[in-house]
Image (cartoon, rainbow, N blue to C red; front, side):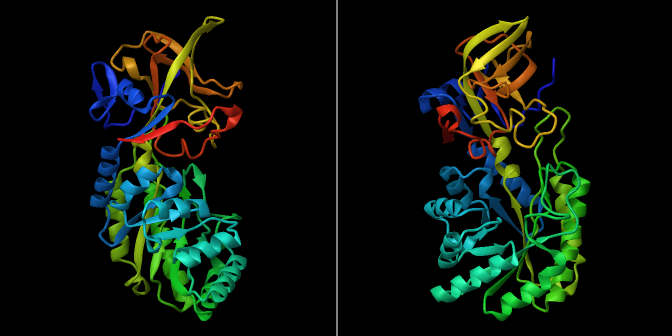
Length: 408
């Protein structure tokens, strides 16, 4: 048998079934009226934000990266929990505004912003994290045409990356941000042209579980921010230190130590150069805040045996859970945490693969895992589904359409 990933803490069991709060998996599906279904726990999100804020220095604000999960009820919940929101498209800007969140709390990063997106952000009063000199010129021209002062920051491409990160966002040639050595010249130009100067965005990597590596990268980011602020000749009002905190998905993964990270960041800020004395800092996190709070429920529609191997065929799959199938940046496929939700307390009795309903061999939610015997009608739960599930999977592939979503 191949091991399954670790089930996150915080879920309950009622009458032998997986439960979110006081509701069983079966009750949640009946309430939604269908499978597949994403369920997000508001209590687990609140707890994660609370625990993280308790560990961070008071000088460090918390931003939510909307791309992790843009479900509107999640955004509305986050509005009362975090300080800011980081978006990566005009579509996300519209979603956040629809959730009643002030544009002043929003920053907009990402390469390839269209002029229509720049115009919408500038008109709304959102901070733009500039990804190139060309984008800076376009933003300034649009602001002048509209008669609106744009709020501009610079996304920095640092020479370092976050060691052990699942996706490296800095170091070497990147489509993200502006190479550090060119930042001071651009900062001076932006300020000279009358923009509201909002500082730097330094994002070196994501989905890292190495506590020491995260601490080291945050220290490097602070040092770089001070160096660039000095070279720019202007006060640094704000600095987004990025995120990078990962969650355990696979066998052997261990959670990051947020207490140690917060303590180290506090010490680094206490020793920071004078040029950063008035700077406001934030961490930008998405997956870490919502990833473990979500489950994906899908029903077994067939049980079959092929060459002696058991396959549990579900009505869900890759089109909703691309990452769980190993097709979202994973080099070596490993199993996510997966369980039979309707037999959550039952012992393992067989080896089985959980597969989806798509006509591709890539559609595997769990490969040769250990499960209790499951039958047609049982529900399968894929954990760590609160981030990059519904929002990062090809829901329209083969015409199956999106899954239902609910926040409980």
